[in-house]
Amino acid sequence: MLFGAKKFCFLIAMQVPPGFTLHILEEAGSTNDICLALADAGAPDGTVVFAHHQTAGKGRQGRKWFSRPGSSLTFSLLLRLSIDELGLLSRFSLLGCSAMVDVLAQYYQLQGLIKWPNDVIVHGKKICGVLMEALWQGRALQAVILGMGVNLARDAYPPDVNLRYPATSIESEVGFAPQPLELLEKLLIMLDQTRKNLVTDDFMHAKNAQLAIRGEWVTLDENTGEPRRVRLLEIDQDGGLWVEAEDGTRSKVYAGELSNGSSSS
Image (spheres, rainbow, N blue to C red):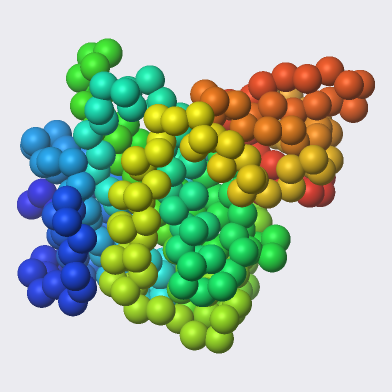
């Protein structure tokens, strides 16, 4: 069975924005895996896979995304890139983060910030993670899958484990948890609006304005040796992060983990 899900639900409890096709699952392993399969089968741009409960959600570098039914928003979005977008693959994780930051500000009066490369934090705690995966045919890019997980309720994350980065939820910040499909509708509209500016220089200028811990000294772990202390400068047009070392030299990194302390985030 393509979806690998316990039950496939056709009841849609939201207004699906124009340009999107929504698949709602009661339970699924990884919505990214399902979306990748749909992309391989020819599904169009704007295909969305939403799961009320994701049992095998994925994070970066093989990590798992913890999810409780109804306490998190977990979905994946299939994007077919235009010719102008093809050279800007590294911007798509920022697309998801930026849309979440804008939704938090507009609807919940929360100041979210982008924790490079793929998280959104509120008051120094992670509230949303983005996982971008690509479908290739040889050297030709077929589709981008943008997976997003958002903590809605206080019990969205286990309180009794050592998280790589402190977590929070919308309920913890504003006193109530939005319904998953309610937030999904808002996010899809914002993703569509933000994507229209993705190919412009203004897109990256705006993302730098949303960059967390910019100008601060942090620990950078690139998994290539000892972590090093760096100061965050800005995100480049190609999505790389410019940092300054303690000796004043500057370099651009494309992958790594940032933390305020000696442990990785």
